[in-house]
Length: 218
Image 1 (tube, helix red, strand yellow):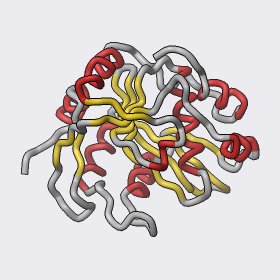
Image 2: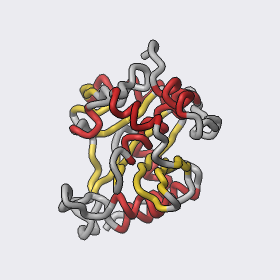
Image 3: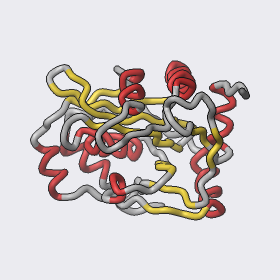
């Protein structure tokens, strides 16, 4: 079994590849480089009227990096809609190590002291690679994603990589680009210097919506 260190993992992201397992019970990891890459637009991110309305009711407290291991563990769990997950023990360990190195982050939705949704991903330069999300309450992962986009826009990020396009994120304007077209976008983002920590307005829904829905740019 080939050893993959956190440093090797970061290098792989800069080359446009990432690891996945066949299932949570499979100890092997496989390098993936999609022919069509899912990208969530940081400029032109779409939030539906119903989601805006839900956010204005402030159903969750949004926290950042306070329960990373709980978030990735929840993303690895089986659900009614997901019998098999691609997050195995090696992925749990590797990305937790990246988190301790300051390269991997979680956005968390809390309700009355309980973690009810969230997402995690890898940060390199001005690129953020979204890995997985989970939800135990209506809109919990979607609202976490809106907060992530606001944070990335505010911090000058250039790329939010979604890896693959699926129905859950298609509603936000997610699109696919061919592998050869993705590479220069990735390189440009890697050359940048996004600030993940500068956004301090998660309590202010108006500020979150404003920064999440910036228009213009690439």
